Length: 343
Ligand SMILES: NC(=O)c1ccc[n+]([C@@H]2O[C@H](COP(=O)([O-])OP(=O)(O)OC[C@H]3O[C@@H](n4cnc5c(N)ncnc54)[C@H](O)[C@@H]3O)[C@@H](O)[C@H]2O)c1
Image (cartoon, rainbow, N blue to C red; front, side):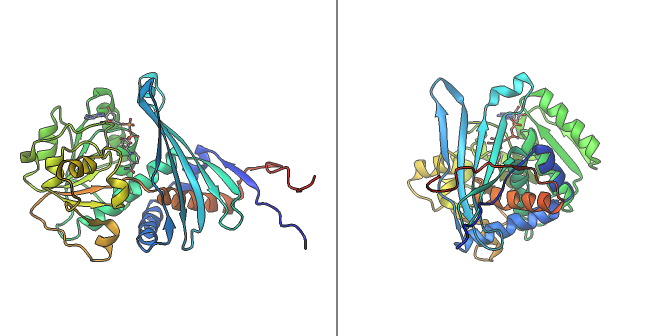
């Protein structure tokens, strides 16, 4: 029997990732939805993320997200993503990442992709997919408010716009005036229509928005006044730790994965610690897609996506296939070298 060769090992740069994803927003949103359905059907392995933290650098962390997804994606892998918030002051992005794809049959890693664009893309695709599903009964919001406007807010706006959303009003709130100005500049360049307003206070942003996107780097809740939500907005709680437990408890809560979301001191985790139960979690996005959960229109509807590794794999495999198809795959020759068992 001839020995099988291991797959070639490829390195895919951020520039290649961006080219492969450009203009593919609708396809990527569909893939995110399909990944949720595979996960919901049990055709995935997605253990808890591992948070590497450092006693002497308390704001920094590196998270490992191992996962495996079946269906027609059929790949295993790992996202390894750093968050160093102090980077921003020195002019480089907070988050950096690689995504490793492993061959389903041999276990061999066959690609290392720049991961931060894939991560922001899958987060935005998940947000756009959730916004679409969760607004079907209550009607599409025409006033959106972005609470925290860094990289992920920009990607979320891009994905909403590319999948058919337009807004009469776009509200912006950020503790950093420079970030708010940069986001407004991006909105202008993106061709977004609608009135753009920078809100200095969070209350006016929330009261003036029917769709609120939280994408801050807050480590603990800083929004606790329930009256700001009396108009029952749809909330994409992407940064997971902004809302006080009392707001969580007064809302309909939809998650991507229950066990994942009730960990790591997210707002939902704090609500569970406060009440001793999880009854305030109404279901997953897959439950909504499958029609297994009702979404009352008279209370806030909060989507909290922990961010599943299976989504990174689904988007990463899409990128890999696109780069392979274009003939631009950069393979590292002889990457796997010691291949004969006895030399
Ligand atoms: N759930 C997921 O799947 C997922 C995926 C990726 C990122 N995230 C989270 O999204 C968040 C945003 O990521 P990013 O890459 O856009 O970060 P970023 O650093 O680029 O931007 C964050 C912005 O939030 C602002 N901000 C911080 N605290 C604030 C506050 N209390 N009020 C208002 N503005 C505030 C900052 O000034 C900054 O402009 C992070 O918390 C990240 O962990 C979640």
